[in-house]
Length: 113
Image 1 (tube, helix red, strand yellow):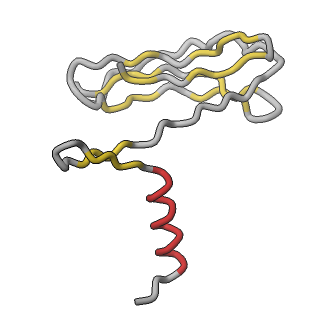
Image 2 (cartoon, one colour; image 1 turned 30 degrees about the vertical axis):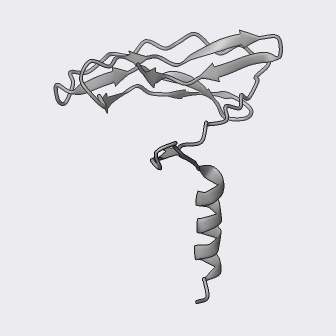
């Protein structure tokens, strides 16, 4: 049996991006990889957050995610807010924000908690 290069590459990627652990009774657990967080540091402080008029939600399960400044590589660009579907009941959105570090400013992504 001969594997095509694309299938071989996909198989290798799957193999190296996950791990399996076999328990004492033969059970198998698949462990997902831990994401690597890399920050881009910006020397200039971001502008003040813009005021956004929040429109009514299109559906009850939708949550407003506020707009924010994004670094484009040479300037800050405003990313407008939008509604996002809540992934499960009871979770709340934690807004992303710019944080100060000795190397400059970096963006901390928003997330559901």
